[in-house]
Length: 537
Ligand code: GLC
View 1 (cartoon, rainbow, N blue to C red):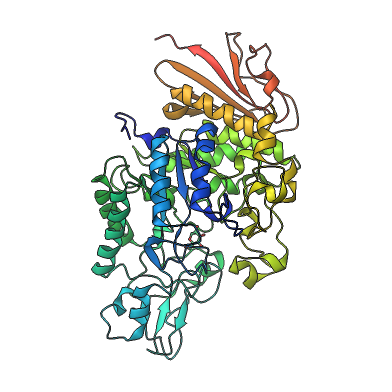
View 2 (cartoon, rainbow, N blue to C red):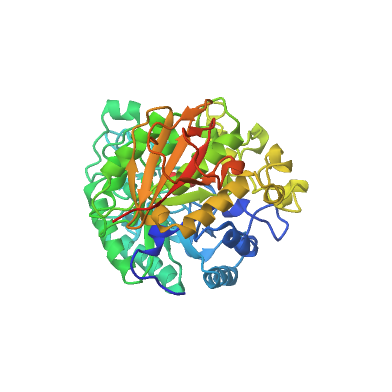
């Protein structure tokens, strides 16, 4: 596959996040598989994305849908075989699509042979690969909690010791202070890079180290869920730096960190894992956009804060949905149709300066689905029902067609399909000029043809009149992006001079291609990209 010089490919690329069990089932077991993804590569190419990130497809007892890995270099049979994976990778590359894997470094499954050995005896050489503690005064070692508010320590009867698990008890945390752990994990990284994968999304990248003395977290930290001693420890940065050096031996490969910031909003923390922009992660997710109010002011504030937090040379990335946090169109409590929200959000995501990540199905405006209690699969949902119904709502099958099970599978899917599939599906929306799918499709096409939208500078304007405005520019061109978050027509006050401007793209397709008339009004909930011609130099 050809390697670009100049701007790295991942800064220009649009990523597409696939939740493999929900993409396409080709063997009739109700669960998506690698062959299903392979068959849809041409679809992804046509949609116009450049890279795919696969949530885990490794061997796993599936206590956390694959984020509990029992074999880092084996494919879970429900997804297919290693041969299927190789085929997928080579066909993706042949089409010019990159593929990145999900890498879970913080913990393994309790069924991983490492843990089986580690727990067998305190004298076993592997024992120290995990985090053990004898407890304090006959009690748990400290007050650290899992991300769902229960003690993160579990006592092993065999050894009488507690082990630490940031997530489910079936996901024991590794001891990254043990050099053998690092060596083993780095070998796994080499294995996949050697096979040709284009990089990794690093699961909970900021949690690898815990304070060596295991002090209690302050009570205020427990209440506000700001973990002090069990995340973001200085040694994490060291390991990520070493990982970067390793990955840099393989040209064009990348690391994207899921920086688990809870509660969200701490852009500076997420950005800190980019190091000096070249020595740590290539990209780090910042989830603040998902927790923003539906207003131009609110979006502008979080976007500006994020840009400011980035180190010089650090490259931004944006995400609106994922398999944990729900669908983009459901985040914002604002009385507006999901479809209109989907369009405006797409224009935002694909025009900001930074690498965009599209979650499968967002290109047709898929929504969170209510999952009846009997069908909840996410164990957090089962544990905490009805307080919390789990993460399944945004993991439902991809909606391909208006037919049975939305064309996802001939069998009953592992999670129920959203009932809106008759209109909200790829086949139907491709036929409709004004659909969310065509909106994404045309935006992606435009983005490809206008380098300033990919790598140009960004300047955020003050949101005067209820709309968000920013400019993207490079040496030769300038584009204005205006997003009206209100139900009212909005006069664009910035356009004082009557210049030659054209609406290159609008959420309201009949306006696309029209010259800008003065005074210029944005329609309710309209998002536009305005071409302002060439800049005189
Ligand atoms: C990440 C994953 C999530 C998983 C957790 C533990 O946050 O996105 O799905 O449960 O890590 O691996």
